Length: 495
Image (tube, rainbow, N blue to C red; front, side):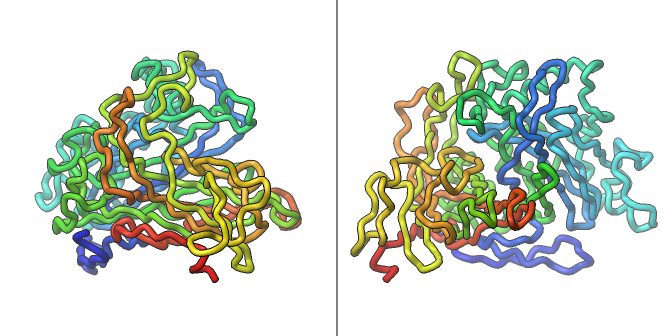
């Protein structure tokens, strides 16, 4: 590896004070890319798609500009098979903030309405304040110090909300089917082939079918101009379109039944010094064939987080929200359905499915340890984990098989032999030979056995002794994907 922890001073215009970008250390700072690692949206009926989800849930996120200089944030929605559905741009004046409700996007067609100075002479879409100094915070044509964002001349503003009117705009039908169908495992619909899958169908009842809850993740990139490209398309990186200026920050919330969990958006810093070299792991590495032209730091690969299984005090238990990088780039627009309109892994699944992991270990409060997600239970002694799993042994499973998902800890999910404790999660894996797949990866073997990921723990009490509450927080990073390390816990190290 050509890097470890690298410090670069980047001035972003915060009252003239430079921000210290510590690359390969994921910290809460302004960044060039933001990641919402997982979202859920409950669908409500529309004329084109009269379905109703089993849960009323929404995900909000904000995009904020930490600089006095204007910026364009390029937002992309991805399915849990890591193919994109839509993208759009948000113009940010200096120190601006924009908040997005994904339920408003999926159910009403509402997208953020913003515009730069060229298309907003009355300062009505994206106001930049009233003092004499504030015009410098916009892209005023008569201010050569600020870029004009010429691509935004035709892309922004999008219109008035709803951006795609259900009755008057014929585009709403295609937009609705694309985002609603794509993110609930029913194919992209009118805006793509009806069989194009970007994520799989889920059913929380366990009886098959679809719960009509939209799932996926969101990336937000600082770009130099408005555009309609996805990060997995040629021309997005290496052409000057993406910016290496670390000036974006934000947060997210998942809200359901009067409860909410949230955190900062994952801040992914970029280097404007060309520090990342070909072969280095970067955040968008699979989309640039490992050439590091994205210049974005990678995330972590091993994690620690506490958990409790449902009990008298916390009857909601623990869920893990896990984002993973399959390291796979495919040339197709989407994977096939099962022929009955459902996107299921047994028919036309991505070539990497299911994702494997290196090691998952559960510890209790007395430092007893059990290895989970293994075919052969670990035995006591050198190289093993003591004590072995309970009888019957843990079955052969991939604990975190898709690129983003929610996973319960306990009887209805990943089983552990302990009521309380913490988990060691080594989510590294090797992407093997996929050439025999109908949709092979063009990146087989990329980055060896190192794979970046992100983990959030959600701890719930649903009306039990602790009342009704939810707590969400990012797990603890143990190893950065920058390090190239793939640490294994063995039994003799625990004694």
